[in-house]
Image (tube, rainbow, N blue to C red; front, side, top):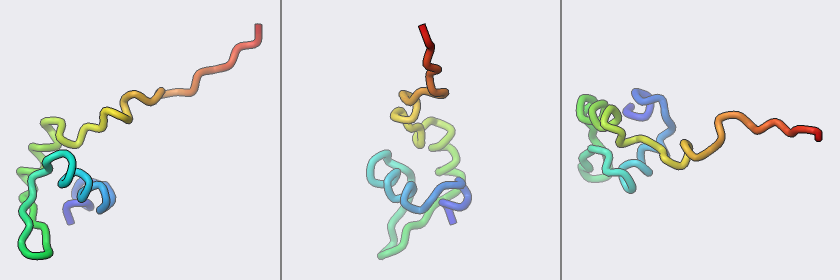
Length: 65
C-alpha cells in the first residue's frame, strides 16, 4: 500500500528501508507504515536520489565542425 501511495515499485520501498532509513516498523514478516511519517521523510529528502541528479537532463547535441 505504501508503494502505491508513493507511486513507486515495492522494490524501492525495501531499498529505502535498508539503505536510507525510511520510517517503518516490522511486525513478524510484515512491514507497517504511518503515512504521515513516510510523507514527512519524503519531504525532508529521504527518498532523494543523488545518482539521478548526476545524469544529464537532455542528451548533448553533436556538432559538425
